[in-house]
Image 1 (cartoon, rainbow, N blue to C red):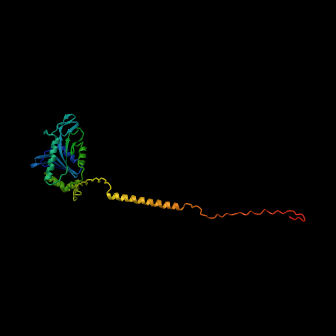
Image 2 (spheres, rainbow, N blue to C red):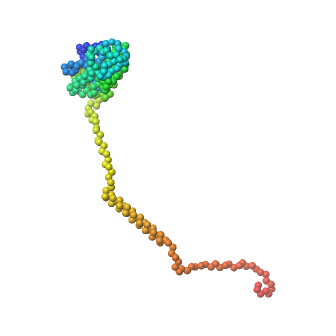
Image 3 (cartoon, rainbow, N blue to C red):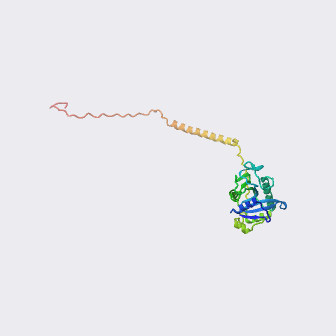
Length: 296
């Protein structure tokens, strides 16, 4: 990670601890510490971090004494640690959330006036307890895009996880865009070679393609209600029925004619020929005849 501190900046103990955390991360990012934005540089920003996927603004808060316990952070209520008011080292009584939101707005406006599209700018309050002090939970989400992270050099895991994943968009911040943004914010810009060596792309991926335009689906037109048959359809239906009836009558007539022709007719004076069977003669049997017997 590249860390650039504004020349002449006077960092508090918590801010220096925060810088030491950033320098120990291998994450690809550029951190501008103690940036001055707004009209005539009147708005002081603790840190502006630019990664290949987006920008986050950091409000750093330390503690006046060693406070350990359970952190309760609300957007519109005083913050407590184990039901005890959190004693921050900042003398300002402003809620950290309010100051962070003002800083996010100032950074976004500054970049837009320089004709740089910052996209969605996130914000995080970095609470830096004294070493050896445990404050939990180590990360809390106040609202969409606004988080609270507890970290110091011995315990900076949640801060590192946040920096590596706070923006889930595509890699859109190339080396040239980071240099332009740093110049617009009035901070010392790293060289192009430093950014490329740190892991930034030389050109933003798909930078030559137009942004995707959401396509509005065409309204669904319900089908028209079914209409009753027309007069022409009625006439065609009756013609078909009539043709079917006529065909059936013709078939019945043909069948009746065929049956009538096949009926038997009564006899009209025809002679009946009878056959008489001639009996066969009796079998011959020889007889004994006496001499001079007349009938033998």
